[in-house]
Length: 196
Image 1: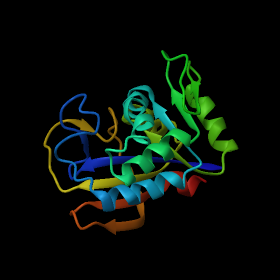
Image 2: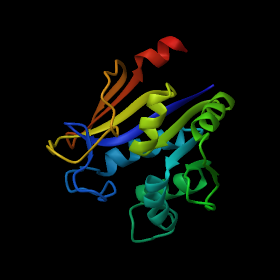
Image 3: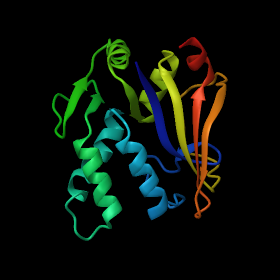
Image 4: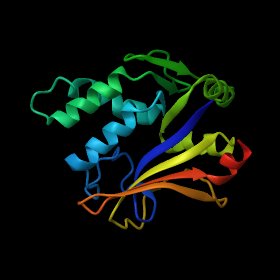
């Protein structure tokens, strides 16, 4: 059985966007080569990734072209290769087609389809997008969080989860610090781990 792992860049106050639509490109992020290589390794180890539509379209707009852009550093081109080649699932009610080894799940039974996908997959299934992660959390399907925490307090902006106000108990699985002051923390969601 697979494990749904929500991976996200966050501020110290668990914000993922300061300004609506900044698409993870906020000036508060400290993504340098060391961190990007660690993120590349995490992505490469996944069995597949599942994105909500908004997150997918942000990725789709940049990463396929990045892999062949000689003006970019090799670690960015590498991530472009990883993302483009990785099997992907796009969860969307509006998209009917997608490229880059992407299948689409939509409709009222999307969460049930994702539960079946999890049961049929071995290894990590990366999750991108706060709305999707919140739906998986509500359904009891989200297993782990991989939070890359940047040393900034935003005070406002979009939260790690959308409209979720219940306590979440976590167990720390791994912690890593980077020279930039960024930390990467990998947590198991306790109730899901104990139930599994």
